[in-house]
Image 1: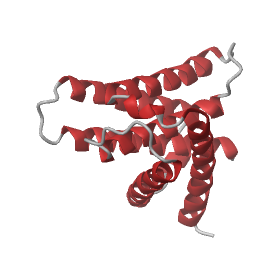
Image 2: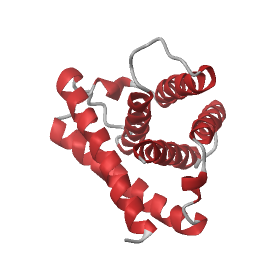
Image 3: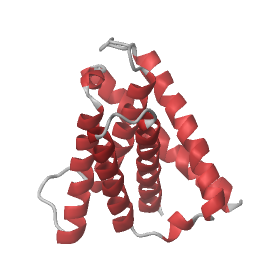
Image 4: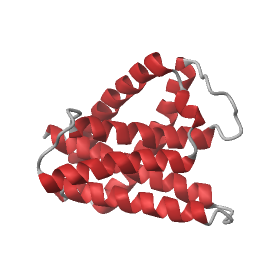
Length: 181
């Protein structure tokens, strides 16, 4: 099996787990995340990423949620951000689960395609990266998103923000894959 195929299989397995968690959250809470603005989603991801970084640095944690759970949350919040962009102008808070999952799958498909293109050009370099780098890169992307939101006059800002959320999603999936190895 080629590394490309191995990456695709591992990527899909990580996403399948995240999707299951996403569906469980919808069953518990509905699609209450529809009220979140872009900055709020970025802040939620920031909290999760910063917690991972703190645990990495202190090598100790007090809260029982695992680092794995935080990576899953980062994946799902990044997907929520991308869904929110797709549904801009749609004021509905309560989406039927089937519709929410269709949007989830569409966002994942687009982001997976981007990952495969980048993976081709970068030659699976992510496999050599540290878990600390994934966190640091995600935090960097979040700071970029915050800066872009503060200068929202740019006409193509949503595209740039969306691409940063796609990168965050892919880094978090890579972290999940590396945790399984």
